[in-house]
Length: 395
Image (cartoon, rainbow, N blue to C red; front, side):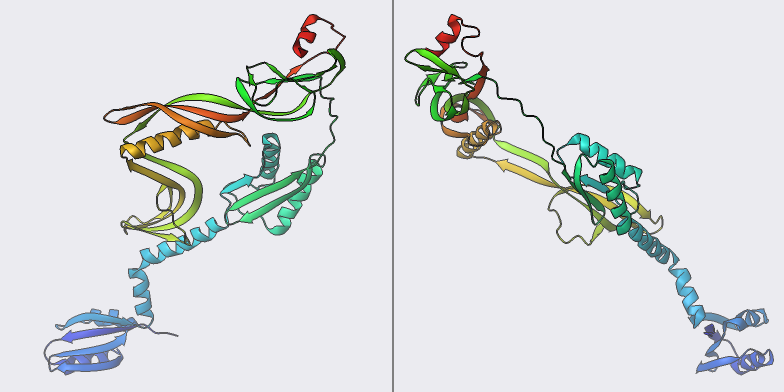
């Protein structure tokens, strides 16, 4: 067994008498280092130290060191707050790395997402709960599939760090598709036709034709020799050149800070003004932080926290007039392009006028845009409502 020892400095006259007195009181001297006739350094067992203090003596006795178990005990006492902090930090780290902080259901079906989240919650798979083992997750997946066998083909629950990602495949059902109604293709807006891709119907307006909103481009009435022979559902796509007049003001100096949508969870040790991020190897340059303190020491300037970090992007511009015009045009383009669909695009633009003042520039910009101008108008089968209007549409 490791015995506790104490190293003492003793000062006083007639040191030899002091040593003799220790031996007479059964205090074992383990080691003696003599410095002078009136000063020595001795090592005794800690259990004998209290006996030594009880002896009436005129000598000056000073503890200079502990050895063995006493040294270990003393070190633990002196560093108890650090040891306790590390111990609790390790416990928190273990607990938090085995806890779920978010559940993502990959879907565009909000109703199905609600059903899945409800089922997961019923089985204890929810935020701030401990992770389930593999067998438990397999059982949960089976239960959900059995309950929604008519809606789900399969479901997968994947554990990534402190997150569950849930993916599923909906079960395909065959719906009765109604017949397409009889119809004309008409212009959605004023335009010059640039492209016609028609699979059925009789083309009334050709490439390069100017049409107003509501004009018939492809008729559902098929005519021959000025006589209607059949009624069909016109189908196809019509593109046309349309026009926009955009007024936009852009500031000389522009500052913006916004979140990119990227987010991560990080454990952090905070010491004074320094932060040590654990296992974060790809740090954000700028970020918004929500700090959740897990462990704090009221004596030491150190605490352990769990941060939600959201990446931000900062734009800080001080523009020349040339840069202002370019950026104002791009901003106007972006405003239009946000409304465009696939295969639609800006064909050309022209700055009609500009106004420059102290803090900004204002541009009036004319855009020509190629857009899908296809729209539909339902019709009756020719002859069922034989009125002059139907015939006029063909002409």
